[in-house]
Image (tube, rainbow, N blue to C red):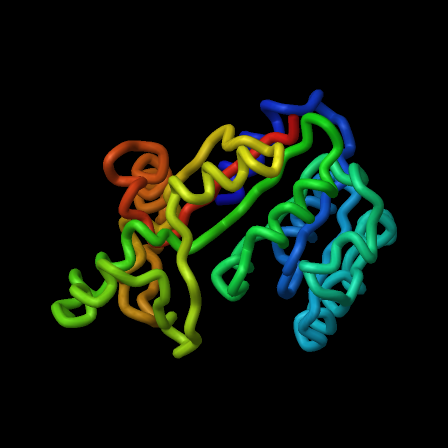
Length: 233
């Protein structure tokens, strides 16, 4: 997914421009730190104090220049208007968050307001059009039948989440002024790998196959996750 995000950023902004990036629900800060290392000015917003602590520890180990470009704010992604002014960012990331938000539309509208004109909104969501794939491929026929008509699921950690459908998010993004520009499938071919599976010594072919599937119909439509990129008008 990092390659897809970099591709969209490179296609929208001049080469070498230091972008203002907001990572909502940054977790332990992996993606945000990667972008700060690339020269961008990054703000990470996270409400989980444990994740904030991990992110601060990782940041403390970085050179001073990177630390100066990475700001961490402890807070809820649904309160972006409290922390930031509208139009403050060129790129807003919201990866792996919507599946734990009961009513995502207000959150998405708030994220769109944070974008400057021409800004990029990057979302990573659970694919509601493919919830039957994992139980079906695992031979859980009852689970697959239930999933066809459901928007909820339980992840491998036993945590309940909510899935989004591509058509619904496309309409939502258009309604909040950040129409869908591009989308990809994530974990198309690898989602059913058993927990603890060791990657191959040389993962080049695996990554290439997953990348190709994530860009190609019909494969991307049955991905476990969807990566959507909207652009602020």
